[in-house]
Image (cartoon, rainbow, N blue to C red; front, side, top):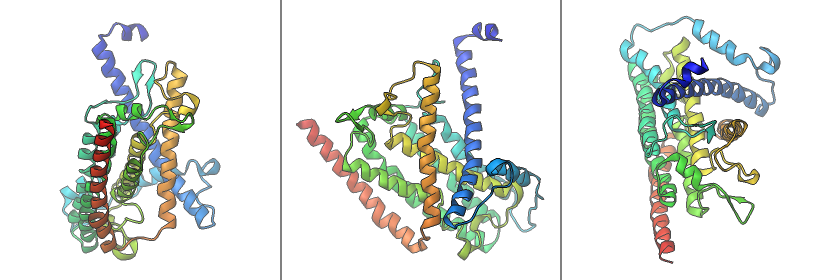
Length: 358
């Protein structure tokens, strides 16, 4: 097998490595989705002073497998009044953006001679925002296709909410690119390597108050983009009884939630990449591409550990903060975050211009 592989052309070998990385990345993403759900249920139980899932397997670790089997084998019911083509299409679109965006996330330095990114695009962040914007179609189609008032209201809410927060999210990262001078995500990680004063990690991209503000804006927008509390208005069980997914059952219902958790993982990965050094850990000298296989695995572990920290934050906020009213949410997006993001861009540009002249 190894001899056969060595006789292949370099282009063919690269293609096979890319396919292998795509399969492994997808498997890791789906595993993280499953166990993020378990993590949320256990943290929720801890907040509410109860146990949570702990019966299926040791410490309840096989609960995601049981939930997946249940979702696949539950009765698949399609109400007669729905618009069937859009009804089937909507849950498929829900999961697609996170899977497509997985391609440009540098989740490690190198593993052997292979870079740990599927597509190291020079316009990686533009690709990300272009694909993320497709996610709203899933919720809107689900609300429209269900042909029912509560799902329709949920779909309308999601379209207004996601459009407003996509603008703020896109504008929030511009100061980072002004500092780095590159849209490539790997280049952004390289700009964050090293330390300041010998012990402060050079994260927050050449530290400044403007970049910290950019991170705060991106974090808030990420909660809205992923429909997480306190911005879960498209579902809002107390108002819309579940919103856009009311009419769904079985695996279609599960795909919406798989998409939500996959988008949480993607948003966490983007924040780690843009603001927290990606796979680097400068205190231990782990801020350069790995020269050995164990070093490459360690970089991937560092990246996933940082992503895990943000996932815990997403979950903690859900069970500790109340939901915003819809008018409060829209006011925050259009009248607060977008102007602040615009001012942040202008101040960053002026500061960089002043610094370059001095």
